[in-house]
Amino acid sequence: MGKRLLVLQSGGSCPGSSDAQFGVSKRAEQEGYEVLFSQDGYRELMEPDATFCNIHRLPCVQAGIQGLRKQRCSPIGTSRANPAPVDKTGELKDPEQFARISTIIRENLTRNRVDIVIVIGGDNSLGAAGVLMRHGVIERLNGVPKTVDNDIGRGVQRSFGVLTAAGEGAEWAKRMQAEGESNDKMSILEIMGRDSGDLAARIATAAEASTLLIAEVEVPRDHVVERIRALRAQSRSNALLVIAEAFRIDGQKTHVSTEPDPFGNLRLGGVGRRVERWLNEADIKTMYACPSYLIRSAAATERDSVFAKTLGERAAEEAIAGHVGKVAILPRGSKRDDQISTMDLSGVKGDKRLPIELYDADQLRMREESAPYLF
Image (cartoon, rainbow, N blue to C red; front, side, top):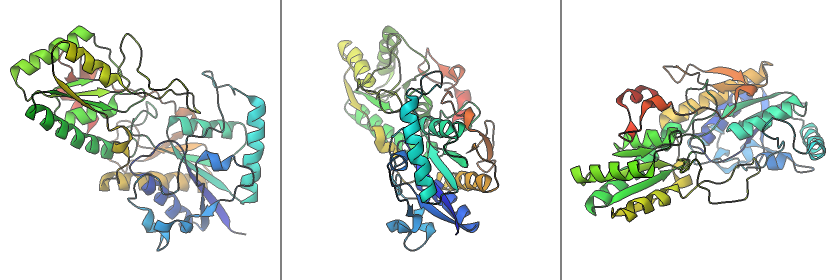
């Protein structure tokens, strides 16, 4: 019987997801593997008696694997199901439940004759993959980092999809700037990012926003209001505030949900509205928008498409060669997108943050020297 590789995407959408799936599939097929996919991320992997489909069953792949390139979101599907919930120390929250789920996963992989699993996901999803490997549930597994937050790990330069999402966000920002200037209002654009202000900073810089509030630096209300008031007095063209959704007020993030997701995260949102009230109470007219997930649903740019494909190819190549428990990455400090390397799954911690020394908390914008880091 032939060898089989299962590709699985977990977590949210991201520009370039389909290109990473293409890279994995192309490399696997070149090495004689049949490529299967999980239609619902980890959720299908955890379902009793799951049957994984051949990648060529996808409508976009009917004419060939090349059809996966530059699709929006994830053609193979995704979900936020978590097969291995752990506490903050990394210990299993419910060992008995994990044992039951582990049995189902092993049976599914055995019955479908899966030799290798490739997981495309962010820090939560790849963290779960690491738990499955540590406990011997899956023996041959590698990962591809996927997040527009760009927070996978401190040793990673950039994840795929970041530049595309930043470009999409910049277009939103420019429209908001034009609306604000025309209507003599301060436009407020709230940008996603669970713990990092990286994406907001890229968007604000690309759109030449007059002000920026990031997740990593808390700025007092009075300073925010007075800085914006001063800028508005200089010119009505100073009409755009970009704010990271994880910007803290009184040390706390702003949430729109009280129920955590399967990975223990509360959904963020609404901090832009709170800052809008600050400005309104100071008689500064405003308008607000939060594109949220829309900026991560775009088809990848050519650069991101090639980058995602290359990461996918490397993850599959390493696994086929027997180098498992790895994540294909662009190492920090890399000058070119093709300088791909690997790191252990244990290095995926979601702990990368925007360097605060690149942010001017007085002027409320990125410093000029931040350009090489962001672009």
